[in-house]
Amino acid sequence: VQLQASGGGLVQAGESLRLSCATRGLRTDDYDIAWFRQAPGKEREGVSYIAATGGHTAYAGSVKGRFTISRDNANNTVYLQMNSLKPEDTAVYYCAATRVVLSGIRRPNEYAYWGQGTLVTVSS
Image (cartoon, rainbow, N blue to C red; front, side, top):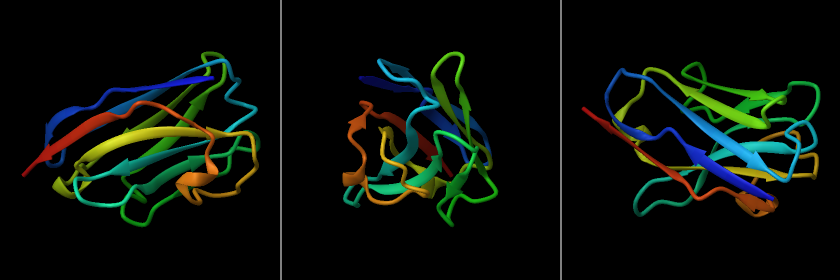
């Protein structure tokens, strides 16, 4: 199983980015997938989650209403649309997958597979 996160970059506050998590060796409709982020000197935190089936999604309070997670099962890819970006969104963003039904973002150690991370930098 491989996950590859991409789409990060340098943007100004208020702008948008779309992250992609391309997967190999798994079907996105068999795995719960989440996005986490880690800023320098901080712990990794959950950002968003999408269930393997049923379409259930979840968001951290800090991004709710600004970020949208979606899944393209035909291409086994998960996206994170990030709008109205803020400087505090600056972090390395990781996608993660698990076959265990989590029903929410939960903790990083509950995910078995991780992508390599993509850096998002938001300037003020």
